[in-house]
Length: 299
Length: 275
Image 1 (tube, helix red, strand yellow):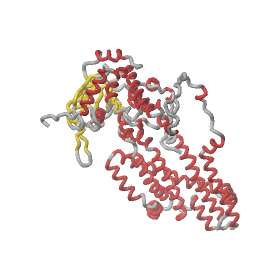
Image 2: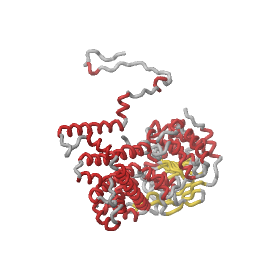
Image 3: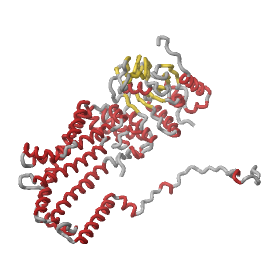
Image 4: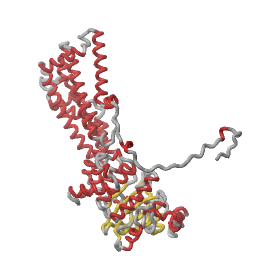
């Protein structure tokens, strides 16, 4: 039924009146089907693949540039570096040096985390502890850990003790600071929910605060790991400590003196590969199993 | 069509205990801000009986959420006393479970089933096997058995609130504290949740203390309504609403109760002469 006069301006025309209809409320079986994503999308979904692509591009650029430069003393080709790396691993005792470095690193890292945990728990359960943490962090965090090495050598002598001391110093403040920040940002609702369940102070920290602050705790652990690694290699490069039997840093230093540039690159490559492994295998796995699974972190 | 068996709900009121579960006497709550002390509620007294769906209703800032927090043990009264089953409330505990308005009250690192089971594990009132059994039962009661192994971040807001309610009810608290649990939900979900809450209540007869600022929700969900004056909160009236359910919404009595409450909330009340 149209009441609009056709002579009137077209713009004023009303939409047609349509019939009502109702469908039976049955879910179509087809609506429940899942269809898998196409293959290339799934491959690109894998973080490992994406990262390998980045590494591959870098390797190609390196190989190409070194071939163009043709100066093995300054810039050996990637293939030469890999040959040097394999031969040092097989015969030159590079493996032993890596193990030595990793041992010192792990001892220092775990001691640093333990110290950070103690301080942070004190800081998040008492107000005084929180003041202690923030004062100490602002005092010691800006201090480069290597700068403490001369002092450490004086106190602990030439050996593992000094290295562990500087590593603890480099790990402790970074981890404590980010853990404390993480605890502070846990929502009041979650805290209240935890107390509702009758949790005491320590169990609140262990069962609510730590999992809830895990994204920033993990970030702190990663930063602490990088600091520890950096500090250790620098300390070895400068002082070649550990009583004559040097680690990876010492290996790099020695080979530079002998003008074995390919071996220097091999040593650096080792540092990079171990860093890559820890970051993209160990930390990734922890993240995937925890914060990402719980929806606290994307990508 | 309402799913609730109304005569059954109404019947329940002649069978309740005569001793209150929760009793507040002249409770005054004060907040300390950076520059001053603010009174949130003044001289509030009321009794909640077993099986009540007791509503605290008032304008925003009338101290109703503070009163709920005080009952939860998160806020100590500046004056007066709060007794739960005769014992003075001074700290949070699993005999008063709280359902918050926020969706982030679930533990993101636990699955739905683990979330429901967690407080029961902490309370150690049931054996591990019974705890799991109860967690499954209550997850099913709120219609989420399909999502038992999902993590909270995959659920919608309404589903998260269901989990929170299941978690709170499963531990059989003496009183269930609900702080505007449906306020952050859309209207359709809220409507469904109110129904579901009533149905759950019908199965468990939990005692509920419920804070809201919606008059309609008050009359549908509540059995007894405490109306508070605006800032600071004082008792204005206690009303009965157990005779109403959602189906009564169009009825005259429902409407007149609503407008009575509306009147109380929106006409300025005379101050006490003693001031």
